Image (cartoon, rainbow, N blue to C red; front, side):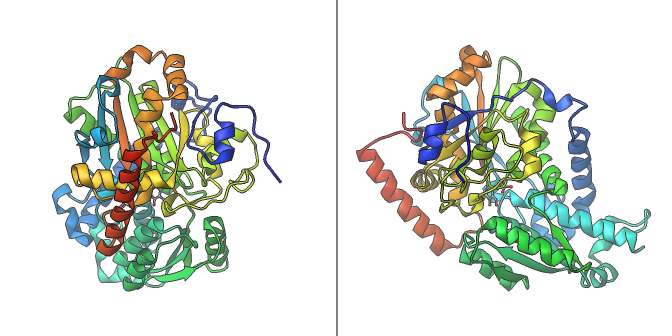
Length: 453
Ligand SMILES: Cc1ncc(COP(=O)(O)O)c(C=O)c1O
């Protein structure tokens, strides 16, 4: 049944699978502080404190975290050369940064921030319940034999398009849990192979992500020794991601970036089911309030957040309801139906959503490598369209005018969140680059900007 979408400047392009920007009509000022909301900003601070508490254990289990004392963090890189390659020249574009979660330790994607957090929080809770971790014990006791033996009786299960499975599988195996990852048909073989090598059981589904999650959930319900990481509903994932906001705030300050009413911050986040970009957005709103403007980005055939949030429906609307295919090379974002709780949390705080074409993802992947040596997977490049939409697009200009930012845009900072890539095997990456270079060459001969303007 085709979905009813209200009139909106982005509607026709959305339905036609053409890159577009949708502005959220429900955006409210300072809504994160509203006590009527289901979540509280103190939950972000709790997540940050929990990460710090888990850090000594993480450092013990993942030696690559030595330099950060066990914190899973990524660099903030000024896109000095990349911005030129993307066509964002001139003062109107302010300063442009890449938040390099593509290089995030432990799992090589933004999913480390959620998946690792949830698995470690569960492990701690289980160990406390079973009396293995007392208030006097160091958290590092969870790496000892007694805890590992306990964890070995439990299975962590998750449905995944790939990267969440990697992060949950890696985290679970590091503590001695068994792990089962239900992969959607979109998952890339190298992600399956990597998990299998770690001793994770991978169940491959012919169906899409929503089906993989449903299967994982129903298996877990039938067996009390299975703990299910539920990407559609998990608040632990959401708040695990949210802690990235404080990290970014510190890095912006260190780079001399002021964020206030005269110096807006724009953040662009690739979206699959919505948990990762939603959690980061929530954390950023808790810190910067009205001075940060967060946008999700999705593939043109998998814009599950855009169709649902545009529809205003109480029931979840999927991309199939809008006649779209959910086919994309951006496996991390190949999600047909967004998380209902993320949709609700984003309704008053998300500035908007834009869509991108697969060819552009590959072109940007090549440009990121060529200009600044940044290694990405296709999903992770999607945010690159952001400054173009906001600064140079019609809808972007409307947004700036409505928010009173038109005269301040040159003082803005833009953050392109690059969400995965470090673990892509070299032969696969070489093929990505080849495809991206060919597209870049063709579009240099026949230039059309990503937002079609
Ligand atoms: C590289 C990458 N970027 C973005 C996302 C989107 O995250 P979410 O599904 O939580 O919206 C994913 C999800 O797997 C991903 O793998």
